[in-house]
Length: 473
Ligand code: C2O
Ligand code: CU
Image 1 (cartoon, helix red, strand yellow):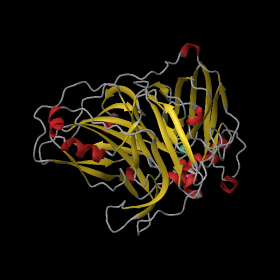
Image 2 (cartoon, protein in one colour):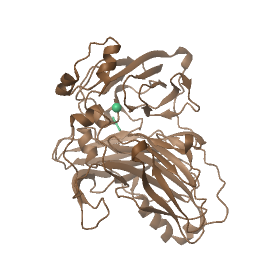
Image 3 (cartoon, helix red, strand yellow):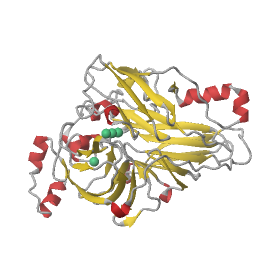
């Protein structure tokens, strides 16, 4: 059975309202809800910027921002009755979930686009516990840029003991002075540079100011980057958060490098945050990714009362998911090169590639290239055909001057090396951030048959060429 459409805030107030439970345990609370889950994409007006008399016209799932957080148990069958109440085609993609190809929500490739007024039943089992999310895969830059996104939580069979288990879903909006979404989607400047960076960041659909915590509390924060293009690097002053999962997949708990929690579009990071501050203390959470545009995301504000005197010392490591371990010795290896973008044409010429002029690239809308091909739309011949059950190592080579979070559908992969240096933890991910001119080697067993998208999750890059299809047969 699938259940639960409930926001973190409601969970909190329910938990507090049930005094016996609140006092006794730290287990997350669940409420059974009838199957199927109903999900509707529709226009809505919501108070994003925190002024009650100013609403923003958005597109939202179930009229909420973000869409309802879907909670299911690991191994469960999910049944979602989706309806399109937009004025254009759409689909729903369940990002990071290793589901059957026909449920992957890619228009033309895995299903026909869902027309206005039409419905589609998404039914699949969820093999892996962790933090995932859902969003449309049609006209993605605009449909996500107008707000269509929600978190999808697959609960571990034995939940971690924490006081609160919360989603922090981050979105980035480009708003006019009267708080409306600007209409400049798909402009060439965004496409050729770093994508549609906005001017307003929201956390769970609101511009955050403060986040209330209690001394001694242990939080599990599930960060989701649902922005079109913004990369975050969050720092928690005065605290020592531990990363326990990346892209839903458990990782050995560790402190983030230099205290920066780097979250590119599409990625998720689960943190354990022990609230070690004193009552009434206040600490800032900053986003410092773009050095000349650092800002305060919110302040952690401590209550007057402690929750407990000693911190919890229960384990924070998550049990592994049933992923097949790549067999590196017998792996077949491929290179995938990325080119294009502003300043990219110069680099292509250096490499002796017959580059179009920047003006031609702009005019054709083909700005980014994967192994020399810029793909528009979702219909394309596979760039690679993989044998089901075999291990593949893909060496991803970023020859551009830009950052790219590359996302593979239907699989999780191990990140083996960055610029030839082995990674410390060989993290499982489904979206891996490549720095300008960086090479990253990933490995996975091609165990999920079908045609799978492989694309940049900066949606303006995806829509101007940076995608391909990997076939597993
Ligand atoms: Cu979240 Cu094809 O993407
Ligand atoms: Cu990109």
